[in-house]
Length: 288
Image (cartoon, rainbow, N blue to C red):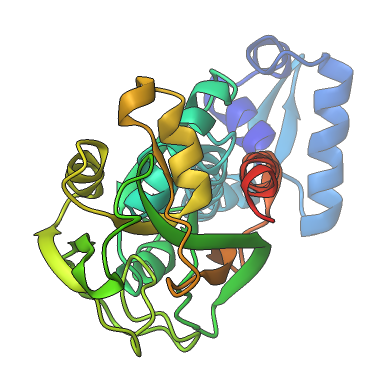
């Protein structure tokens, strides 16, 4: 139909073939195929030229909306690929050190975006198309979402070297997240995974994980968080500010499965696979 409309508008098979970058013979054949499908003549001979038939004139006007709709559909489909950005929804346990590392290693042609979302907000961001994938250990199930298990992380108490070894457990000051979220069916109730049946002395409450880590680096508090996070941040610190597990038998140790969340309707793709492999590599180095 696009070929037909071009011939109709320029009034010549030869001129239309130049515009369409095909041979006159191929263009004439396409017009004949269309005439056979429509069971009507679109053009009539006029000496060495051609003129539209009455049927052709009617078809030209009737086909406009159909061709415009096809062209619009084609443009919208083209806009979906190739993917030029990859958006990850997660919170600071993963975004602070891991996501920046992943972004630096990812191919330059893909822009990696990271948005901060706590559980439930994370899932909604994926459902609404604001994020391509989420990283979570507190999944909130939804019939349109798929959760792909990546591995298991271990959360333990960390502090500067040899800190709080002589304190009673009840006297150890903790720096904890202030942000609340919808409880996950997996039993996660707080962003730092602290067991709900165990008490602790809360000295500081911060919205930002980096602020909580800072109090721990300077020996003001302990922090309960995944070992992989501490391993990543220690690489950037002087020896005296690095954090280590507080080895006390009565302190809790919690293991959680980590998942990548995605829409079921969305193919995994290379960026998803790269994120999964990178996260598995980091987790496997720090989990016993």
